[in-house]
Image (tube, rainbow, N blue to C red; front, side):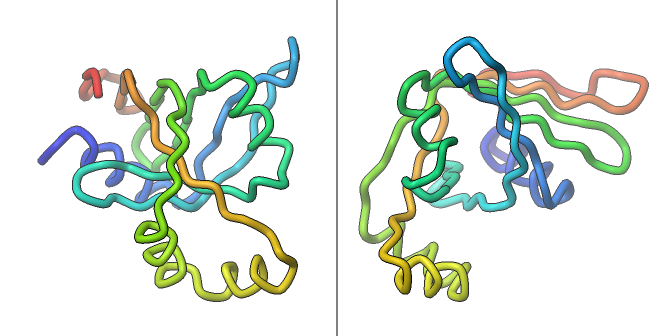
Length: 133
């Protein structure tokens, strides 16, 4: 299993995970749920009208924290924004109701992945795995 697939598996188990960003000098955290693994690259998405998008654009260094029933994962890296209609089509397949709402309001879904990343997957009492991504 690839490292990206390992991270994706933890996110699947967690269902909801948290993106940690900064807003100026203030830390910010918010729940996320959307992610998709395409050709061994893990993509995330959010509306470009949201504050989190502005924060990701201003300071692309982020951390993702996911909690599972038997442990947690920390995954940090630098946001790389992607504009790709093929990927947006995959998002439409995965989340048709949300994308219909975006279309209705004229909102844009922004996609990104993390590069130069590092992941740490831990059990409640022990380190399971740590690797660069």
